[in-house]
Length: 143
Image 1 (tube, rainbow, N blue to C red):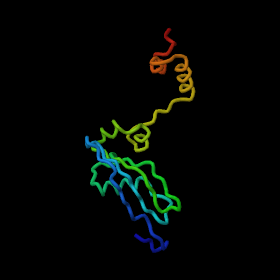
Image 2 (image 1 turned 90 degrees about the vertical axis):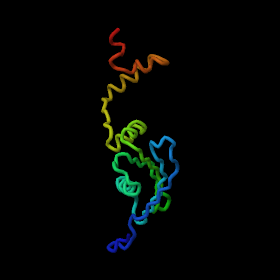
Image 3 (image 1 turned 30 degrees about the vertical axis):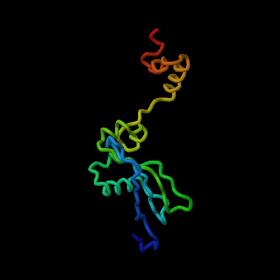
């Protein structure tokens, strides 16, 4: 597609390469090449819309695109995409930070003091006990 007002090409080429199809059919892994001459980059929301149309996905929340890098000179970016079968599988297998970015989870804000107290409690014990020492309710305050 060409923009006649700016006399340059806009984002029109989208070439996903299927890298792997997992045997359990929980998700598809894609390597995505995007050609975007005249633009700095393409938003992840636009890429998700294109993938929804291309793969005929019912729920856009099962698509995750990430790690996009613009090639030297611009005009082309490469990144990864995952398409899950269900939202439950996405919540089960995706890292928490990606779920937060896509709006499927919320980030729990902890105060700076809480984080430092937990760190110092964990430093006092070793081995398997570190997990229990990190819990504020089970901390050494009950002794």
